[in-house]
Image (cartoon, rainbow over all chains, first blue to last red):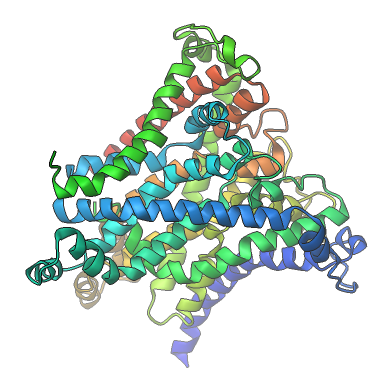
Length: 271
Length: 283
């Protein structure tokens, strides 16, 4: 029993933290289900739930188009990042290519403030006539997704024993075959986690998308950001749109959390 | 021509990064040396370092930089404190439901900051906000977005979203620590506080350093909360550097000036990170 009492204070603190974290989600979900009048009376629990805001958002707004754009941007970003990042990560991990300085230059690219890159990107895309297209956004998202995926995969590749590809080459594989037939499949969880994490970052970006997209190519964060006026009806729709934006990544987060540290540690923590 | 296997693996990534990071960086510097305006892209004239000299006397720019530093310092130190406390709680073997708590407590760092900004703008709104109403019910009238409070409120929102990142890294750091020193300390009769102060903290230093640097670099980019809630106001009280560059470049159309600001920003961040790195490593 005494042991049990000693567990109460930590548990109470964690419960407080849990409430602080969950409350905004719950409130937003509730707001998306409240009729207009109830939204302006936050402490009044007497209301009949309605799906009207969800209907407006899903059937009559641009949000579905923006969800599609966000998904496309994310998929292209992740696809390209894996295609270029995985071989490079292998070169870094196995052959120490470029030494550690090249690794850190690549990491530094990820740390650049978007404010530095947005002006040149805007002008380049203007000259290429690519403003208001998802390709402009994909290019900017690659500036953080490429370094991220590469670093992530270095962390996983470092843990794969060298005997594996040596054995494969004795069995007659070329270096390239040893890489993509033997090594890549062994780091499948790492590839999945890197892809998911890069997708989440792309899905969440507002800054680049806001300045490079137009009506047709707007992504979901841009759509959400446009609910700026605070009227009851728009609060309901905004809340529904917010739930749409955060639900998929929250679910995805449960799958990446476990791998995140290992991936970020790809060098950052091991030094 | 024969290129070694390792460089063939590397070449696509390097080419891509030169194209999407190297070239824009160079281009941006070239733009910063010209009188480049969005309204007259074709007629830009070369003005050398005039933008950089003008920045020295540009009060709005330094206000934005100071606001950003206050924001970063407040947010990151609170995140460190809370993140470390939560990590210690979740690290205890006996804590009930550790995995459950961890997976829920980590969720805020995965969601889009613009949604976080708008959620809190709503929760803290002076008329519609449930948090405002609840604090009023216990006699506390807080104007979250007044000129005095707004920057601090934005920092607290950052704390809500990014303490999880600290928690994630520090928890992993704690779990990687060896057991023996702690057992030896227990045998020698050290209190929990003593072993935290003399063992946990020193051994955790590399992780702490990495977590602080990563969080600081990220907090410097704060933009979404400002965009969602205050748009720099009241006055210039929440004008942060990333928002200011956006404003000058894309609301005032002065791309050359915005690029010069971006370069000064890089320099400031570099100086800060290097100083922090060396002072913490020596300490």
